[in-house]
Each structure stands twice: as C-alpha cells, then as structure tokens.
Amino acid sequence: MLRTVSTLGLSNSYSAQMLDQIESPARLEWWANSVTCLADVEVDVTISVAETGWHARAALRPDVDDEALDFLLELDPLFTLRFPDGSHIDVIAGRSGPGWLVLREVPEAEPADHRPVSGSFNIQ
Image (cartoon, rainbow, N blue to C red; front, side):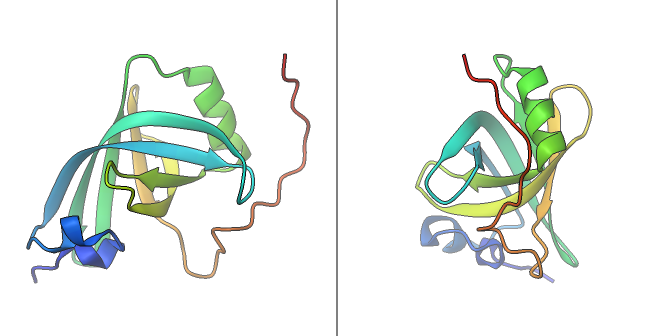
C-alpha cells in the first residue's frame, strides 16, 4: 500500500508528492510549555512509510551537546520535529546509537501541548 506523506500531518509541499520516504534537514524542539522552547537540535531526518504508520531516524549534527540532550530525553522525550517550510509534527525521541535518534508518533491519548514536569533548573 502506497501512502502519501500527508499521513504524517506535514504541509502540502511534502504531501503533494507520492512518496514512501522523506530525507530532510529538520529541527527537534523541546518545549517547556506553549510559549517557551528550551532547546532545539539540528538533525537530518529520514522518514519512511510503513504498514502501520511511519518510521523515522534522525542523524544528529556533530555539534550537539550529548549530555544536555540526554538530560532532556530522560526528563521527557516529547519533541516537536520542525521542517524548513515550517511544517511540524510532535514526536517521541529516543537514542538509537551514537549520533542517532529514533522518532515515533505521539500516541493520540497523550496530549502534545501539556508537559507535566517537576524539578529545577540551574541556569547560569
């Protein structure tokens, strides 16, 4: 079964083409709330259409602060994956080896605009 990329919720510039894979630069953003983006990471993402949705892998750029990224992944792995044209999708990120992340769809039962977090930050 061939699906369009529109099943990912991306903009028309991607979904107008019949594709089963996208390779694109993108940015993973970690939002503390609807107005505060605490971190963003430049990645090269490959998204492939699968029988039951999609699979995605993100190659991290060499300048990524691994320790800070691991902290955010442990705190809450919910990120926004934003493409150069402004289209975006919420994803759950996890490590997939050195320099790689695996991305998966946020379950519909999990609201992407709410992040219950407890803890403290020491910003210098």
